[in-house]
Length: 107
Length: 118
Image 1 (cartoon, each protein chain N blue to C red):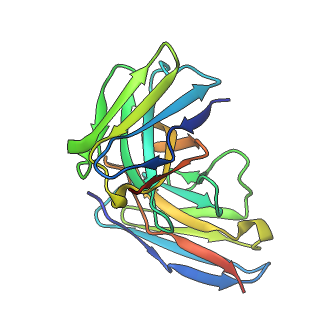
Image 2 (image 1 turned 60 degrees about the vertical axis):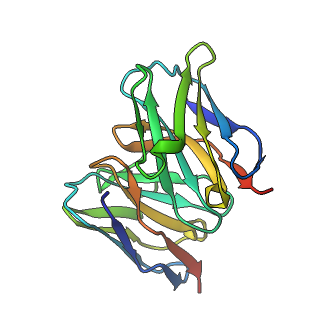
């Protein structure tokens, strides 16, 4: 299975900050990477696919980049609704695998 | 707009079989190109892909669960289901059904909590 390693596992930030989350795959996955957002008690919501393509309705302050084994999710001008847990997910090979998650908390 | 909704018992005894159903609305489960998927999340932990079924009957299961898992399709009801046998406390968690388009998982159901306990 492809292992996905996210860092950091948690971070504290303030409204208006810029945050960056990284995700590393144990082998090359081309750009077959998605980013998901999950709020407490809710199902995950898809934000980005193909490493950098935003799902419909996702604000442009959220962006993704990377290819191969190293990927980044960046949120600029952090808003109150952005405080959540973020997961990366590879879909280059089955079984699909997820990173361990990054919890973005209010400072 | 496709929507998915899980249903099933919230409590299962150890060694028994966990059975869940996912009802698909707003679209047909026989639409080509999609895999109908189960993903689970233990309490306070991350996400684990369980497996999928295609409307042709093709299935693919997580190797860690393969010996205990069965995913079935009911085209007449536009539903698919999960059966996981010989459950233990480690199978406790929220189970999500979702639609997978070549690995891109969207949309998701709201999830259902299943607790394995005597």
